[in-house]
Length: 458
Ligand code: ADP
Ligand code: NG1
Image (cartoon, rainbow, N blue to C red; front, side, top):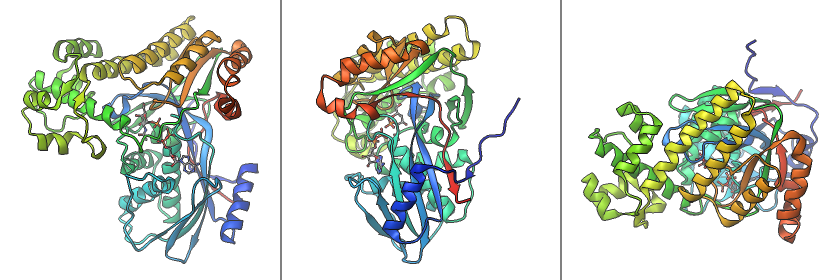
């Protein structure tokens, strides 16, 4: 039976965290909040680094989220504070253009990305004054999308403060676009699941057009998140954008080899569409066209017939101008292989054969190997943690999110979860005092959570 999707606006429930946030707001700004907005982080079950190539991904929202308490003010400024003293207070004038400093990605710039996205959508020339206190509990820089939860929360805050209304799909698309102002040229996975998630179900997220489909996860298994305790801030480094750029160049190279018109082709998913090829055929084409040795800039200019100026402005990003060599074969192999694994994962969930758990676990393990060896987005600690998870009873385990640190997601038979948690604790967290101190927020079972919402006082 079809059920209505959850509403964006809900009445405030009796919630201790909200009450604490309300108290913090009153201490900070005097009056009571007018409304609250909340957006969750996510765990990606499979489909890594392929959203910005145009391929579908399979995440679910997690319980951890970013909340904001908000009121309107008459000061002509946006006043932002955070319950976490690590994140400084800031005041921004409503009469000046919002400028995001990519070279210095401070927390409030993520919030301002969301504000700017909504401002541009509605052509708001002067934003109303707002006072906001933010409280987030998504582990930062750990692949669980704390940044997008913050951007989506800010987008929702700005929409409500300006008495505007948007669908969840529009909000997801606006927030995916405006998060790029911070400098990371990601796809739309994080913002889409943050808005479109529904409690109890993972989602296949397709792009262009954005479309979520429920994915029923198998009975008899649970998903456990474990953080390797290495943080990797994506906007403050160029790892992420180097991969984005490598995928763009690989797209151009494959398109060139097939004699396609290069105009508008920047995503690996566009090539199979243009030539009507399957993902398996694309994997063979990659072997045929691209060599495994890194490509120099000169070789790329020559093959594509472009100038260094065109290369630098049309393909590189601001923070990848210094890169001289690009691995195209390995990155394209990962992307087409991972896109195929997402479709197989969804199909196993839909058909639910008796060996579902084993099949899904195998796909997760293949995904990790591909991320580690072809996409080179893991790190030694994360590989060690994945290894420990598999030895501790997981059927499948893989890095989740951008990588280079952060979290692994493991699929564990439900009856083995207690012994799994104990074994991972003993092997990864307890031997190291820093990890041991972070264990409570670093190792936990996660069930599919609900999406972003605005909360109003009853
Ligand atoms: P992630 O993988 O979690 O999205 P990023 O490195 O892309 O990680 O973004 C992390 C950044 O997001 C942090 O450095 C911080 O600026 C911001 N952020 C995350 N959580 C919060 C929070 N609770 N309050 C303020 N800023 C936050
Ligand atoms: P995280 O792990 O939240 O930084 C990033 C991108 C996603 C996706 C994944 C890798 C952003 C905001 N998010 O996620 O779009 O590409 O990496 O699958 O850039």
